[in-house]
Structure formats: structure tokens, C-alpha cells
Length: 215
Image (cartoon, rainbow, N blue to C red; front, side, top):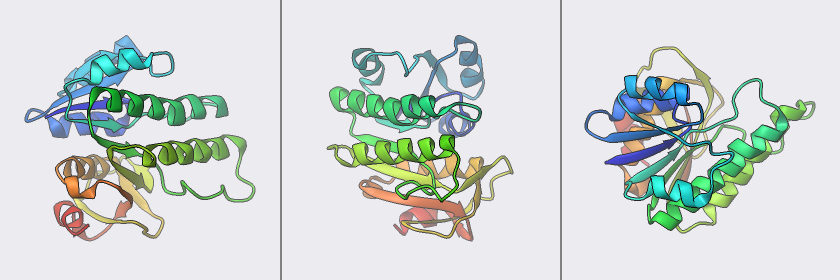
């Protein structure tokens, strides 16, 4: 399989590339040319593509011939409200546009728990912009004729993965290692029956393959 990963230098994306290699070709899109080496060290192929500036034609050319797209991009800590919109929303829309044009139906979007609900009272401006951007990105994807799956992880950690999760349309708030998020994405890519589902994810007691098979 050839998998295009938007946000290829992110912590989840690099773990995902490592899990996909060598059986599948993981193509990580990165904004900074210096990050290509990190993608390659993880076992993927780095392609420089700034999703805040690229045209849909440019991205379509990269996506053509792929088996799936994984949207793992995010403006990241320290970014302001404006970049939450240009990355977390607009870049997702761009990738979905490109997938449609290229005829790539499978699309897995990494979102976040709390998406789809108003920010809690007293939330700061940047957090509110983040939730708004993620919500609008999800809404855009649901309107499309793609085999999409939306994954909403809980609080992300860098702890070693356990291989055991709680995965369902709604789960209690909690944390989950990025290792396990990457493993769940691999399992979802191999489970076409999860298309059209919005799933929340935290650490739990069920082995990942069993959790995905039970959906």
C-alpha cells in the first residue's frame, strides 16, 4: 500500500511511518526540507509540500496512485488562532479535495476529543480556535463521497504504547500514547468497514486488533 501522511514530521506521523514500513510505502508531507531526513529515518519517504501554500493541483499530483490518505497535520503548540484555521481546517480540506480529484477514496483524519462541542466556558482564544477548526474539518469530510474515518484521540502522551485501547464512538476522557494512536491508524487502514465512523480513543484493556474488529 502507498499511504500519504499529511503532517509527516509530527510525532504520530513518524510513528505511523515506522509501523507501515517496510510492507507499505509511507509518504510523509513536510513543510521544512530539513525534516525529510527524519521521515526517511522512520522508514518513510519525505516529500516537501507546504499545505498552507500548496495548490490543489500540486497536492493531487502527490496523492495520485495512493491507496489512502492520513491527515495527521496540526499547527502545533505555540501557534496562534490563525494557524489553527489554516492548518487544522484548511489543510484538511485541501487534502480531501486532492483525494477526491485523485480518486483515492480511503481517508483517515486524526481529530481530537472535544471536537464537535462548544469549547468549555473560560477556554482561551487559541483553544477555541483549535476546536472550531477541527469541528469544521470533520464537517467538511462528512459531506464528501470518500471512505473516511475520523479518529479522536484523548490526551496524547509519549509513554510507550501498551497495545490495548478503548475505541468507540464515545468514550470517557483519558490519555493515550502516540504509539497506540499510530497502531490504531494502521489497523483502521486495514479495516474498510470502519468507513463513515467517528471514533474516540483512549487507553484501555482491549487489544487494538480486537477493538477495531469489534466496530
